[in-house]
Image (cartoon, rainbow, N blue to C red; front, side, top):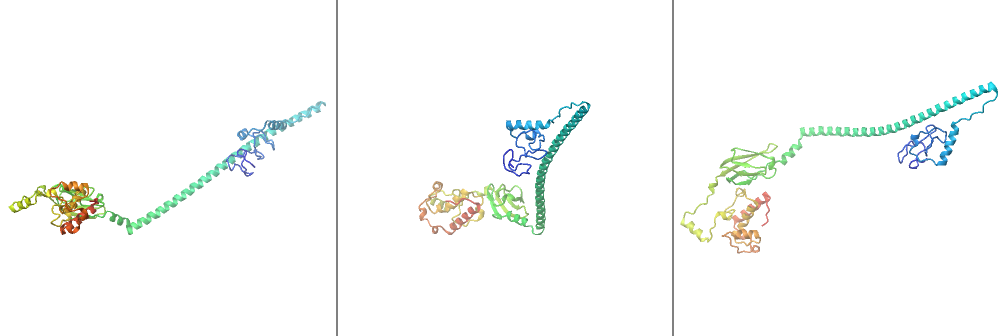
Length: 374
C-alpha cells in the first residue's frame, strides 16, 4: 500500500509510514486504509472519527455525495406500509415498530462500541510506539551506564595499579627529581656592594633560598644574586624534592675599589710615556691582557658588557672593527688605535692570557644565553 500523506510505498500491516513517520489512518473496525476525508468506511460503513481524517485530502464532490447518500440510506431502515386489516394489523405494526426501534438501538450501540474499540486500538498503538521509544532510550541509557561502569572499573584498576607502582618504584617522584635538579653556576663568589650575578639558571623559580647572615645578599626568582651589604654569607638553595646546594659569598665595601695612585716617579713616567690617560675605567676587564681571569670575574656582566669585554682584547691589539657600534664605542677611547684590518687579524697576534680569556668570555656568554655576534 501507499502512505496517504507522502504516497511512499510501505508494508500493508504497518501502523506508521517508514518515510514520513506519520500514523496510517485505518477503519477502527475492519482496518481498511483511509485515503480521503470521509464519514463512513467504504468497506463496512463504520463511522470514521473526524480527528482521524482531518489531515487527509477532501474527497471529490461527486464521490462524497454518493458515499453520503449510500450510507444515509443504510442508516434509515425501510418501513413496511401499515396494515389495513384491523386490530391484528395494528398489533403487527406495533411489533414491527418495536423491532425497528430495537434494531436502531442495536445499531447505535454497535456503532458506539466500534468507535470506542477503534479509539482504544489507536491508544494502544500509540502506547506501543511510546513503549518502543522508551525501550530504545532505556537500552541506550543502559548501554551508557554499562560503558560508564566499565570506565569506572578501568579507572579503579588504574588507580590500584598506580598506587601499587607508587608504593614500589615511585617513578613519578624520580622524574620530578630530575626536573628540579639544582645546578649552581659557582660555589665561591666575591662581589662588591651593589653588584649582582646569575647564580642559577634552569628551575630557578622552583628553588627557595636561606641565608646564614640576613640582609647581605638576596637571590630573586630568576636566579640572580645581588649584594646589598658588606660581609660573608652562605646562601643555601633548597629544591621542592629536598635537594640542597650552597654558595659562599664575600661582599666587599664599594670603597675598596678605589684606584691606586702611582706613588713612584717611575710609575708616573711610564704613564706619561703611553701618551694616553688610560685607566681601568676605560675597560670592562682591565687585566684581560696580562693575567688569567676566573669565572668570578664574569659574574654580573650584562650581554653588552660581555660583548665589549671580548672585543676590547682585539682593540688593544689594533684591530679595525667593521660594525658601527664597535667603531663608535672604541673610537671614543683614547687608547684605541686601529691599524690592522679585521680580515688580516690572526689569533697568533694575541698572547696566551688573551686567548684564554676570550674562551672564558665566550663560554660565559653561552651559559647565560647571550647573543655572541660581534
